[in-house]
Length: 144
Image (cartoon, rainbow, N blue to C red; front, side, top):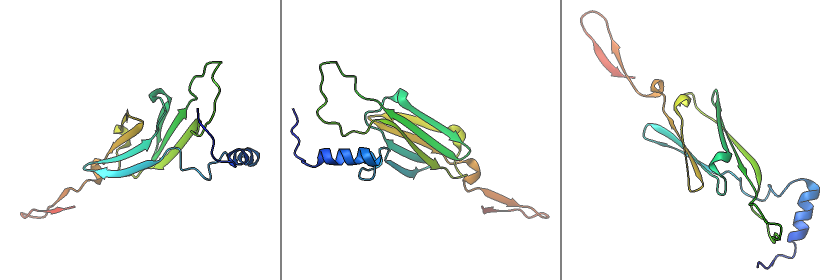
């Protein structure tokens, strides 16, 4: 059994319900992420603890990546009385604008231990390439 030690917790909950804020102003984002480049891929990792893999939806439209996830309540028996509920439930969404230099046609997604990891290859057109200069009998290559 849990003991409540914050005497103002119920007052905070009522205030949040009346103002319609649901406490989001004081909580971190329910879908924090990291983004970094690793070799020839761009990696985005989202923390989604407590979300089932079938409750995650990933869409890409043009350069807009949208990740939606639903954290559902744990099934409760009729004789269970909820003592404390601090984990946010419901549908969460996060949008990320992707650069034109990424190949959005070949995104790979993996979900393990509550972390959704997206790997997006760098587009061929964005990689350095050699350019050949022609003209007469001399040809020269330079880095592009």
